[in-house]
Length: 322
Image (cartoon, rainbow, N blue to C red; front, top):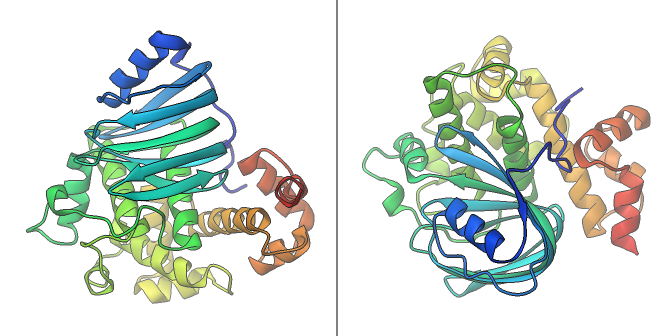
């Protein structure tokens, strides 16, 4: 099953559980900046998993909280599992609720906001990882040159692909990885960030320069095609042809960099798009949402959906239509 063993709604254990001043000090230390946390806050649960120069945090706060934070030493992207949050930076305010992804904070970017009890995954990407990814685009640029036009994903498919990549890279490892593999994981995640949020360094012309076979460039070319055609007919041969590689090279590229097949990755992206459709009210029933993104076996679809989101698709639709 695609993504077996990865469930966004579940955290295995926490590195910290506590409240009050102890929780504030823990989070300030974890994120390397004063977060200016205020409000009731309640109990805080925090878990961190690190891969190379990126980290994946699960953070739960079960009561209202406010923050008025200094700039962080990393870029932080927030995937919202439950609750609602609001972030303001650069005079721009964005809201995030269940199923949303928001670029919340980063260097030279203080931010403020609030939440009313939430469960999120925070992905911290270092300047080192971004420098490596930016070098694939322009050798004369670094993370210091990076600016963002918006702090939300450029499209629903881009958001779905971001979460699919994070799901794969944040999954528990079955075996130790060497330092090169950790660097490659960090670079792939940073590349995904650059292609998820509109910025001044990634343009269509620059993205088209990618070359190679079983490389991260091949994965990125496949991701661009999936972004354009996630809801239509798309076979392994179609993707390989668009990437100018053989189907075998395409398979190897996904296995090497995301530890899954292109087919499993595409199904994961489509599951996320179904989830978005059920949340935003653009469909009236589960069957229409599933069919829109190529799921025609109701039993298998429901099982895969539960594996990722921890509930039946009908429950998602009911919660957001009530």
